[in-house]
Amino acid sequence: MPIWEFLATYGWRFLGGAVVTAEQFILAALVAITVALLAGLGKLSGNWLIRGTAVVYIEIFRGTSLLVQLYWIFFVLPLFGINLDKFTAGFLSVGLNIGAYGAELVRGAIRSVPKGQWEAAYALSMSPTKRMRRIILPQALAIMLPSWGNLLIELLKGTALVSLISVADLMFEAKQINASTFLSAEAFGTALVVYYILARFLVTPFMRGLERAMARRLGRT
Amino acid sequence: MDMSAYPLELPEGDRPMVRFMNVTKSYGTLTVLDDLDLDVAEGEMVTVIGPSGSGKTTVLRMLMTLETINGGVIYVDGKPLTHMERDGRLVPANERYLREMRASIGMCFQHFNLFPHMTALQNCMEGPVQVLRLPKAEARDRAEELLSMVGMIEKKDQHPSRLSGGQQQRVAIARALAMRPKVMLFDEVTSALDPEVIGEVTTVIRKLVAEHNLTMLMVTHQMGFARDISDRVCFFYSGKIEEQGPPDQLFGNPQRERTRQFLSAVKDAG
Image (cartoon, rainbow over all chains, first blue to last red):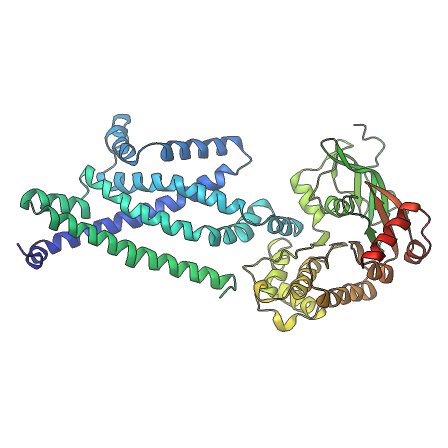
């Protein structure tokens, strides 16, 4: 079967899969950013309980395999009475996994805001919360943004694993089409190209745009 | 430590704006300041000079509560700064008390430390709006007035990255003044500047001394400037005040051998 005929026949299914992948990506990214911020700040907290919780979360989700985490959240949590549908289990697992890496980015960026900035905010008598929110975090954000660009591409590629719990994403559709047609090169080739397009022409330009906007805020353009 | 020797509040009639009382600061076994007693009267400009490592910057940082102290008490405007009263005794101050007290102290740093994500105007409005809870319009008026005073009003919408060192330091002075502090601290504010822009910062400080009744403490390496504008100069040597007095006396007729050595070394260098 020529490739155009293959695409004419199965294009819509790939498109449907790509839409699910995009949804998984966006939701997982929101989860990852939220928990990364919480755990990154938590790890710097003076309260040992908060710090301990953050450390345990980061250690578990960074130290074990994403696939095993996905199976745990989808197959094992129901044994403890927590039932998540596969779509939710999918983006939650990927988000929590990448969030653990993101937490280290957040922590590192906060730590690398120059000491003089902390002291200047302190000298203005700001409360610790206000200092973090108004002075330190905006600068930390600019520092960590380039690394987040990388991490979000990792996250996009990580979403392919949700096909293993039958979420009908791009990878799932590719596998289905392969199983019914045995056109492996075409099926997985198309998936490869679509992932590349999503990463290269959507995620990367979006992050570059954010970096530019941030640079403008710092008056660095 | 026995705290009963320290009054809960300084008595009427003996209330300098700043009082260091037996203040000691050490890092491990290294003693940076040893049993320091120093008063600064209201409206007085005191300059601290001395070789590096003599503890002069530490004096300012302790007053800003950026450094904790290991012994003694610091009073600001008669009230203890580093300690607070509990059950009729002085105990180390908690975060909330410190925050309240240090709102009356402003500090300018060697490296300016302006907030890079804010314009000059926003830098000067941040403290008044966020800490003093001033209405935005009032904070803006105050900030613009101070930026005019330091000659930076034309650049008020610029970010720090667009300003020269001298310009940044002038904005930093305006930012500190916007909090209406009782005490201003200048920590080597000209040390990081190119020689040709030092004058624009010292001019602003001269103006402050001439036109306002602010209490000021300054650490500097510029002896000529210190001699011109100080009411009193303190020469620090290894954690102690070796000699102090009016500038003409200290620079013109130093009494102590170490002071003479330091001043002649500085003269040779510059």
